[in-house]
Image (cartoon, rainbow, N blue to C red; front, side, top):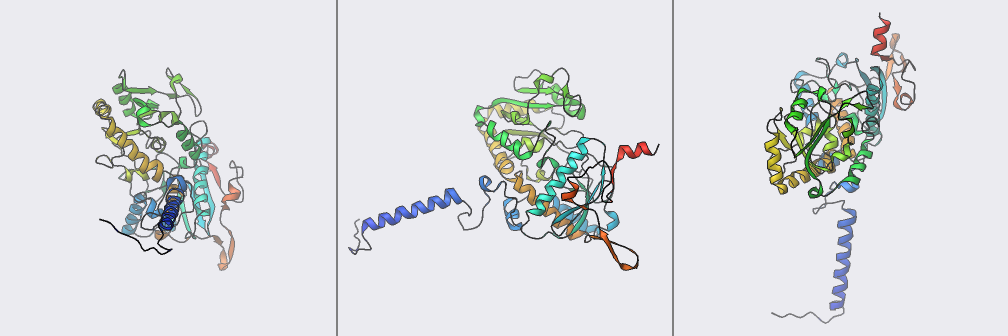
Length: 425
Protein backbone atom coordinates (compact mmCIF):
# COMPACT_ATOMS: atom_id res chain seq x y z
CA UNK A 1 0.00 0.00 0.00
CA UNK A 2 1.28 3.45 -0.89
CA UNK A 3 0.22 6.92 0.11
CA UNK A 4 1.24 10.45 -0.65
CA UNK A 5 1.17 13.72 1.26
CA UNK A 6 0.12 17.10 -0.07
CA UNK A 7 3.05 19.03 -1.44
CA UNK A 8 2.26 22.19 0.51
CA UNK A 9 4.97 23.77 2.63
CA UNK A 10 3.17 22.68 5.86
CA UNK A 11 3.21 19.02 4.93
CA UNK A 12 6.85 18.99 3.94
CA UNK A 13 8.29 15.69 5.31
CA UNK A 14 11.26 17.56 6.78
CA UNK A 15 8.88 19.70 8.81
CA UNK A 16 7.13 16.61 10.12
CA UNK A 17 10.44 15.06 11.17
CA UNK A 18 11.41 18.21 13.07
CA UNK A 19 8.01 18.31 14.81
CA UNK A 20 8.34 14.64 15.76
CA UNK A 21 11.84 15.11 17.19
CA UNK A 22 10.74 18.15 19.21
CA UNK A 23 7.75 16.28 20.64
CA UNK A 24 9.92 13.32 21.57
CA UNK A 25 12.43 15.63 23.26
CA UNK A 26 9.74 17.40 25.28
CA UNK A 27 8.17 14.08 26.28
CA UNK A 28 11.54 12.74 27.45
CA UNK A 29 12.13 15.80 29.61
CA UNK A 30 8.71 15.51 31.23
CA UNK A 31 9.07 11.78 31.81
CA UNK A 32 12.59 11.52 33.17
CA UNK A 33 13.23 14.91 34.76
CA UNK A 34 9.95 16.11 36.17
CA UNK A 35 8.02 12.90 36.74
CA UNK A 36 5.52 14.91 38.76
CA UNK A 37 2.46 13.42 37.09
CA UNK A 38 1.44 9.94 36.05
CA UNK A 39 0.11 9.12 32.60
CA UNK A 40 -3.42 10.36 33.38
CA UNK A 41 -2.20 13.75 34.51
CA UNK A 42 -2.39 13.21 38.29
CA UNK A 43 0.40 13.90 40.79
CA UNK A 44 2.42 10.77 41.58
CA UNK A 45 4.88 10.21 44.41
CA UNK A 46 8.46 9.78 43.26
CA UNK A 47 10.88 8.68 45.96
CA UNK A 48 13.91 10.30 44.33
CA UNK A 49 12.21 13.67 44.27
CA UNK A 50 9.74 13.46 47.17
CA UNK A 51 11.31 11.32 49.92
CA UNK A 52 12.25 14.47 51.85
CA UNK A 53 9.28 16.58 50.82
CA UNK A 54 7.85 17.41 54.23
CA UNK A 55 5.19 19.71 52.81
CA UNK A 56 2.97 17.24 50.97
CA UNK A 57 -0.72 18.09 51.08
CA UNK A 58 -3.25 15.86 52.80
CA UNK A 59 -4.41 14.58 49.43
CA UNK A 60 -0.86 13.84 48.36
CA UNK A 61 -0.15 12.05 51.63
CA UNK A 62 -3.23 9.89 51.20
CA UNK A 63 -2.37 9.11 47.58
CA UNK A 64 1.31 8.36 48.22
CA UNK A 65 1.04 6.32 51.41
CA UNK A 66 -2.13 4.25 51.15
CA UNK A 67 -2.40 1.85 54.06
CA UNK A 68 0.16 3.61 56.26
CA UNK A 69 -2.55 5.37 58.26
CA UNK A 70 -4.56 2.21 59.04
CA UNK A 71 -3.58 2.28 62.70
CA UNK A 72 -4.70 5.91 63.07
CA UNK A 73 -8.02 5.16 61.38
CA UNK A 74 -8.54 2.22 63.74
CA UNK A 75 -7.92 4.41 66.79
CA UNK A 76 -10.47 6.96 65.58
CA UNK A 77 -13.10 4.28 64.97
CA UNK A 78 -12.52 2.82 68.43
CA UNK A 79 -12.76 6.20 70.10
CA UNK A 80 -16.01 7.03 68.34
CA UNK A 81 -17.56 3.84 69.72
CA UNK A 82 -16.88 4.89 73.32
CA UNK A 83 -17.22 8.68 73.02
CA UNK A 84 -15.05 11.75 72.73
CA UNK A 85 -11.81 12.04 74.69
CA UNK A 86 -12.34 13.99 77.91
CA UNK A 87 -9.79 16.45 79.29
CA UNK A 88 -9.29 14.34 82.40
CA UNK A 89 -8.41 11.34 80.26
CA UNK A 90 -5.32 12.98 78.82
CA UNK A 91 -2.63 11.23 80.79
CA UNK A 92 -0.04 13.49 82.44
CA UNK A 93 2.21 10.68 83.67
CA UNK A 94 4.45 11.17 80.67
CA UNK A 95 4.81 14.01 78.15
CA UNK A 96 1.85 16.39 77.82
CA UNK A 97 1.79 18.77 74.89
CA UNK A 98 -0.42 21.19 72.99
CA UNK A 99 -0.38 21.79 69.26
CA UNK A 100 -2.09 25.06 68.48
CA UNK A 101 -1.79 27.70 65.81
CA UNK A 102 0.79 25.60 64.00
CA UNK A 103 3.06 25.67 67.05
CA UNK A 104 4.01 23.08 69.64
CA UNK A 105 3.87 23.79 73.38
CA UNK A 106 5.04 21.53 76.20
CA UNK A 107 2.69 21.55 79.20
CA UNK A 108 4.28 18.89 81.40
CA UNK A 109 7.19 16.52 80.99
CA UNK A 110 7.88 13.60 83.30
CA UNK A 111 11.24 12.34 82.13
CA UNK A 112 12.89 9.27 83.60
CA UNK A 113 16.47 9.80 84.76
CA UNK A 114 18.97 8.95 82.04
CA UNK A 115 19.89 9.90 78.50
CA UNK A 116 17.69 7.42 76.64
CA UNK A 117 14.23 8.67 77.73
CA UNK A 118 15.27 12.30 77.24
CA UNK A 119 16.71 11.58 73.80
CA UNK A 120 13.57 9.73 72.75
CA UNK A 121 11.30 12.53 73.98
CA UNK A 122 13.31 15.27 72.27
CA UNK A 123 13.47 13.32 69.01
CA UNK A 124 9.70 12.85 69.11
CA UNK A 125 9.08 16.53 69.80
CA UNK A 126 11.40 17.53 66.96
CA UNK A 127 9.51 15.30 64.53
CA UNK A 128 6.14 16.72 65.59
CA UNK A 129 7.50 20.26 65.36
CA UNK A 130 8.77 19.66 61.82
CA UNK A 131 5.45 18.19 60.73
CA UNK A 132 3.64 21.27 62.06
CA UNK A 133 6.05 23.76 60.51
CA UNK A 134 5.91 22.16 57.08
CA UNK A 135 2.16 21.64 56.94
CA UNK A 136 0.70 23.41 53.90
CA UNK A 137 -2.53 24.06 55.83
CA UNK A 138 -3.26 24.86 59.51
CA UNK A 139 -3.50 21.86 61.85
CA UNK A 140 -6.47 21.87 64.29
CA UNK A 141 -5.61 22.73 67.89
CA UNK A 142 -5.33 19.74 70.22
CA UNK A 143 -3.88 18.61 73.52
CA UNK A 144 -2.30 15.18 73.83
CA UNK A 145 0.18 13.15 75.83
CA UNK A 146 2.73 10.59 74.71
CA UNK A 147 5.15 8.11 76.25
CA UNK A 148 8.50 6.94 74.88
CA UNK A 149 8.68 3.81 77.03
CA UNK A 150 8.80 0.44 75.30
CA UNK A 151 6.03 -0.93 77.53
CA UNK A 152 3.33 1.09 79.28
CA UNK A 153 1.44 0.17 82.42
CA UNK A 154 -2.15 -0.94 81.74
CA UNK A 155 -4.42 2.08 81.57
CA UNK A 156 -7.71 2.98 79.88
CA UNK A 157 -6.33 6.40 78.96
CA UNK A 158 -5.84 7.14 75.25
CA UNK A 159 -2.11 7.85 75.37
CA UNK A 160 0.14 8.06 72.31
CA UNK A 161 2.57 5.15 72.40
CA UNK A 162 5.40 3.61 70.35
CA UNK A 163 3.57 0.31 70.07
CA UNK A 164 0.59 -1.59 71.42
CA UNK A 165 -0.85 -5.06 71.80
CA UNK A 166 -4.04 -6.13 70.06
CA UNK A 167 -5.66 -6.08 73.50
CA UNK A 168 -4.87 -2.36 73.94
CA UNK A 169 -7.25 -0.56 71.55
CA UNK A 170 -7.15 2.64 73.61
CA UNK A 171 -3.54 3.37 72.65
CA UNK A 172 -2.66 5.51 69.63
CA UNK A 173 0.50 4.25 67.90
CA UNK A 174 2.67 7.21 66.92
CA UNK A 175 5.63 7.46 64.58
CA UNK A 176 8.79 6.12 66.19
CA UNK A 177 11.36 8.55 67.61
CA UNK A 178 14.01 6.77 65.53
CA UNK A 179 12.64 8.36 62.36
CA UNK A 180 14.22 11.57 63.68
CA UNK A 181 17.34 10.17 65.36
CA UNK A 182 18.60 7.64 67.83
CA UNK A 183 21.70 8.00 69.98
CA UNK A 184 24.76 8.36 67.75
CA UNK A 185 26.40 5.45 69.56
CA UNK A 186 23.49 3.25 68.47
CA UNK A 187 22.09 4.52 65.17
CA UNK A 188 22.34 8.28 64.65
CA UNK A 189 20.06 10.37 62.45
CA UNK A 190 17.52 8.53 60.34
CA UNK A 191 18.29 10.37 57.11
CA UNK A 192 22.02 9.81 57.67
CA UNK A 193 21.32 6.12 58.24
CA UNK A 194 19.44 5.91 54.95
CA UNK A 195 22.33 7.64 53.19
CA UNK A 196 24.84 5.15 54.62
CA UNK A 197 22.66 2.23 53.56
CA UNK A 198 22.41 3.66 50.04
CA UNK A 199 26.21 3.96 49.83
CA UNK A 200 26.75 0.32 50.86
CA UNK A 201 23.92 -1.24 48.86
CA UNK A 202 24.73 -3.86 46.25
CA UNK A 203 22.63 -5.75 43.70
CA UNK A 204 20.81 -8.55 45.52
CA UNK A 205 22.70 -11.33 43.79
CA UNK A 206 26.06 -9.84 44.91
CA UNK A 207 25.17 -9.86 48.60
CA UNK A 208 26.28 -12.47 51.13
CA UNK A 209 23.82 -15.41 50.79
CA UNK A 210 23.25 -15.75 54.52
CA UNK A 211 20.82 -14.51 57.13
CA UNK A 212 22.31 -12.02 59.59
CA UNK A 213 21.34 -11.00 63.11
CA UNK A 214 23.05 -9.24 66.01
CA UNK A 215 21.44 -8.59 69.36
CA UNK A 216 21.22 -9.26 73.06
CA UNK A 217 19.63 -12.61 73.88
CA UNK A 218 18.44 -11.35 77.27
CA UNK A 219 15.83 -9.04 75.74
CA UNK A 220 13.53 -11.82 74.59
CA UNK A 221 13.43 -15.55 75.30
CA UNK A 222 12.84 -16.29 71.62
CA UNK A 223 16.18 -14.73 70.75
CA UNK A 224 17.83 -17.61 72.62
CA UNK A 225 15.91 -19.99 70.36
CA UNK A 226 17.07 -18.06 67.28
CA UNK A 227 20.72 -18.39 68.32
CA UNK A 228 20.30 -22.11 68.99
CA UNK A 229 18.51 -22.72 65.69
CA UNK A 230 21.18 -20.91 63.66
CA UNK A 231 24.27 -22.24 65.45
CA UNK A 232 26.72 -23.95 63.12
CA UNK A 233 24.56 -23.45 60.00
CA UNK A 234 26.27 -22.40 56.77
CA UNK A 235 23.36 -20.12 55.86
CA UNK A 236 23.53 -18.13 59.12
CA UNK A 237 25.64 -15.33 60.60
CA UNK A 238 23.87 -14.95 63.93
CA UNK A 239 25.72 -13.66 66.99
CA UNK A 240 24.83 -12.67 70.54
CA UNK A 241 25.89 -9.15 71.54
CA UNK A 242 25.73 -8.13 75.20
CA UNK A 243 25.54 -4.47 76.14
CA UNK A 244 27.81 -3.33 78.95
CA UNK A 245 26.12 0.05 78.93
CA UNK A 246 24.30 2.32 76.49
CA UNK A 247 27.40 2.78 74.33
CA UNK A 248 29.55 -0.32 74.62
CA UNK A 249 29.14 -4.04 74.03
CA UNK A 250 30.85 -6.87 75.84
CA UNK A 251 30.74 -10.66 75.92
CA UNK A 252 32.51 -13.36 74.00
CA UNK A 253 31.30 -12.08 70.61
CA UNK A 254 31.86 -8.35 71.10
CA UNK A 255 34.29 -8.23 68.16
CA UNK A 256 31.59 -9.42 65.75
CA UNK A 257 29.50 -6.26 66.01
CA UNK A 258 28.40 -4.72 62.72
CA UNK A 259 26.58 -1.51 61.95
CA UNK A 260 22.99 -1.45 60.80
CA UNK A 261 23.99 -0.44 57.24
CA UNK A 262 26.35 -3.43 57.19
CA UNK A 263 23.34 -5.69 57.76
CA UNK A 264 22.27 -4.67 54.26
CA UNK A 265 25.29 -6.47 52.80
CA UNK A 266 23.45 -9.75 53.44
CA UNK A 267 20.65 -11.18 51.33
CA UNK A 268 18.56 -11.99 54.41
CA UNK A 269 18.02 -10.07 57.65
CA UNK A 270 16.02 -11.06 60.73
CA UNK A 271 13.84 -8.67 62.68
CA UNK A 272 13.23 -9.82 66.25
CA UNK A 273 11.06 -8.32 68.94
CA UNK A 274 12.80 -7.16 72.11
CA UNK A 275 11.24 -6.15 75.42
CA UNK A 276 8.27 -5.23 73.26
CA UNK A 277 8.62 -4.07 69.66
CA UNK A 278 12.13 -3.70 68.30
CA UNK A 279 13.20 -0.37 66.83
CA UNK A 280 15.59 -1.99 64.35
CA UNK A 281 12.78 -3.13 62.06
CA UNK A 282 12.42 0.16 60.18
CA UNK A 283 16.17 0.24 59.51
CA UNK A 284 16.26 -3.31 58.16
CA UNK A 285 13.28 -2.54 55.92
CA UNK A 286 15.46 0.10 54.27
CA UNK A 287 17.69 -2.71 52.93
CA UNK A 288 17.30 -4.34 49.55
CA UNK A 289 17.29 -7.64 51.43
CA UNK A 290 14.67 -10.19 52.38
CA UNK A 291 13.33 -9.26 55.81
CA UNK A 292 12.41 -12.31 57.90
CA UNK A 293 10.04 -11.60 60.78
CA UNK A 294 8.64 -14.06 63.35
CA UNK A 295 4.93 -13.83 64.10
CA UNK A 296 4.44 -10.54 65.94
CA UNK A 297 2.42 -9.47 68.94
CA UNK A 298 3.53 -5.80 69.10
CA UNK A 299 1.94 -3.50 66.53
CA UNK A 300 3.75 -0.74 64.61
CA UNK A 301 2.27 1.60 61.96
CA UNK A 302 3.95 -0.06 58.96
CA UNK A 303 2.68 -3.51 59.90
CA UNK A 304 -0.52 -2.82 57.98
CA UNK A 305 1.57 -2.82 54.80
CA UNK A 306 3.45 -6.09 55.18
CA UNK A 307 2.44 -8.85 52.74
CA UNK A 308 3.41 -12.45 53.47
CA UNK A 309 2.52 -14.14 50.17
CA UNK A 310 1.63 -13.59 46.53
CA UNK A 311 3.17 -11.35 43.85
CA UNK A 312 3.40 -8.40 46.26
CA UNK A 313 5.06 -10.36 49.07
CA UNK A 314 7.49 -8.02 50.84
CA UNK A 315 8.70 -10.09 53.81
CA UNK A 316 8.87 -13.67 55.04
CA UNK A 317 6.99 -14.72 58.16
CA UNK A 318 8.23 -17.58 60.33
CA UNK A 319 7.18 -19.16 63.60
CA UNK A 320 7.76 -17.22 66.79
CA UNK A 321 10.15 -19.89 68.10
CA UNK A 322 12.17 -20.03 64.83
CA UNK A 323 11.48 -23.76 64.50
CA UNK A 324 10.94 -23.40 60.73
CA UNK A 325 13.85 -21.03 60.06
CA UNK A 326 16.09 -23.69 58.49
CA UNK A 327 13.33 -24.88 56.15
CA UNK A 328 12.51 -21.33 55.11
CA UNK A 329 16.17 -20.47 54.47
CA UNK A 330 16.70 -23.58 52.35
CA UNK A 331 13.64 -22.69 50.25
CA UNK A 332 14.77 -19.09 49.76
CA UNK A 333 18.32 -20.07 48.81
CA UNK A 334 16.93 -22.60 46.33
CA UNK A 335 14.72 -19.92 44.74
CA UNK A 336 16.93 -16.86 44.32
CA UNK A 337 14.55 -15.15 41.87
CA UNK A 338 11.70 -15.34 44.39
CA UNK A 339 13.98 -14.03 47.14
CA UNK A 340 15.06 -11.16 44.90
CA UNK A 341 11.40 -10.33 44.17
CA UNK A 342 10.53 -10.24 47.87
CA UNK A 343 13.48 -7.95 48.57
CA UNK A 344 12.52 -5.58 45.75
CA UNK A 345 8.90 -5.51 46.88
CA UNK A 346 10.15 -4.53 50.31
CA UNK A 347 12.17 -1.69 48.82
CA UNK A 348 9.16 -0.46 46.85
CA UNK A 349 6.76 -0.62 49.82
CA UNK A 350 9.00 0.60 52.61
CA UNK A 351 12.36 2.17 51.73
CA UNK A 352 10.98 4.12 48.78
CA UNK A 353 7.51 4.76 50.17
CA UNK A 354 6.15 4.21 53.69
CA UNK A 355 9.44 4.67 55.57
CA UNK A 356 10.59 7.84 53.81
CA UNK A 357 10.97 10.97 55.96
CA UNK A 358 8.12 12.52 53.95
CA UNK A 359 5.82 9.65 54.92
CA UNK A 360 6.57 10.16 58.61
CA UNK A 361 5.73 13.88 58.42
CA UNK A 362 2.45 12.88 56.79
CA UNK A 363 1.84 10.34 59.55
CA UNK A 364 2.29 12.94 62.29
CA UNK A 365 -0.09 15.37 60.61
CA UNK A 366 -2.67 12.65 60.03
CA UNK A 367 -2.43 11.72 63.71
CA UNK A 368 -2.78 15.30 64.91
CA UNK A 369 -5.81 15.91 62.70
CA UNK A 370 -7.43 12.59 63.66
CA UNK A 371 -6.83 13.21 67.37
CA UNK A 372 -8.37 16.68 67.13
CA UNK A 373 -11.46 15.07 65.62
CA UNK A 374 -12.18 13.05 68.78
CA UNK A 375 -10.67 15.22 71.55
CA UNK A 376 -11.49 18.60 73.14
CA UNK A 377 -10.02 21.77 71.73
CA UNK A 378 -6.80 22.73 73.47
CA UNK A 379 -6.86 25.57 75.99
CA UNK A 380 -3.91 27.83 75.37
CA UNK A 381 -4.54 30.15 78.31
CA UNK A 382 -4.92 29.49 82.00
CA UNK A 383 -8.23 30.66 83.43
CA UNK A 384 -8.29 32.36 86.83
CA UNK A 385 -11.04 33.42 89.19
CA UNK A 386 -13.54 35.91 87.87
CA UNK A 387 -13.28 34.55 84.33
CA UNK A 388 -10.14 36.51 83.58
CA UNK A 389 -7.56 35.00 81.26
CA UNK A 390 -4.19 34.36 82.84
CA UNK A 391 -0.84 33.43 81.35
CA UNK A 392 -0.26 31.12 78.43
CA UNK A 393 0.04 27.42 79.31
CA UNK A 394 3.33 25.63 78.93
CA UNK A 395 6.38 26.73 77.00
CA UNK A 396 6.92 26.90 73.27
CA UNK A 397 9.01 24.16 71.68
CA UNK A 398 11.71 26.54 70.48
CA UNK A 399 12.42 27.63 74.06
CA UNK A 400 11.98 24.18 75.55
CA UNK A 401 14.53 22.60 73.23
CA UNK A 402 17.36 24.90 74.36
CA UNK A 403 16.60 24.90 78.08
CA UNK A 404 18.19 22.87 80.86
CA UNK A 405 15.86 19.93 81.35
CA UNK A 406 17.17 19.10 84.80
CA UNK A 407 15.13 21.69 86.62
CA UNK A 408 12.16 23.98 86.51
CA UNK A 409 11.77 26.86 84.13
CA UNK A 410 8.88 28.98 82.98
CA UNK A 411 6.73 27.23 85.59
CA UNK A 412 6.97 24.03 83.56
CA UNK A 413 7.26 20.96 85.81
CA UNK A 414 10.09 18.83 84.43
CA UNK A 415 10.42 15.92 86.83
CA UNK A 416 12.85 13.06 86.97
CA UNK A 417 11.08 9.99 88.35
CA UNK A 418 14.21 8.68 90.04
CA UNK A 419 14.78 12.03 91.79
CA UNK A 420 11.19 12.06 92.99
CA UNK A 421 11.71 8.66 94.61
CA UNK A 422 14.87 9.84 96.36
CA UNK A 423 13.17 12.99 97.63
CA UNK A 424 10.24 11.00 99.02
CA UNK A 425 12.47 8.90 101.26
